[in-house]
Image (cartoon, rainbow, N blue to C red; front, side, top):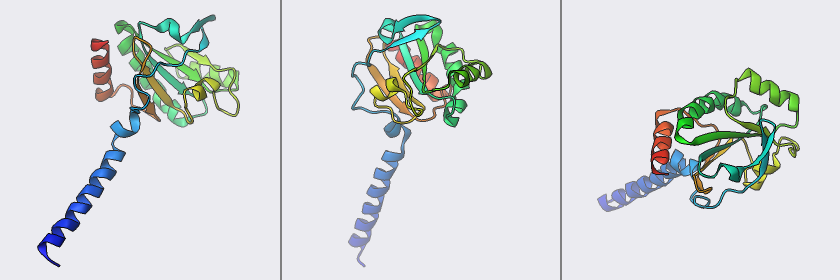
Length: 180
């Protein structure tokens, strides 16, 4: 085998590895350019006994988290969402959880056991652990989170578990909140 052929083979392997790596990186899996910049779907929800709409939070950065009390990754990321809420609250931002729970008692038990410190709403239209609100966003699994900017546009979609108070995520939010 000649040197040129060996180089061509190694180049092909390197390109294939680069493509695989690109698809495996969190920036590819976590962000969806196809929805970034699109308007967040409005919906009504009840928080603290009052009916409101997602659009009522315009002017704030909203971290819209779809979750379920039966979902182990949701359980694991709840403490990080609590800490994120504490980090962003003074910067005119809020975490809002929408639960895909049919069982109101399980939902309330989860909130108490995990000392959830951000507003949450149990979607009453949930059937078979699928929230109608989440499905209107295109969500097929939980947890799934949408970062919505102050103008009501989706800045980022995050699929699956996220370490919300990691240095990288806190830096992301600090940058987002400084520019919006």
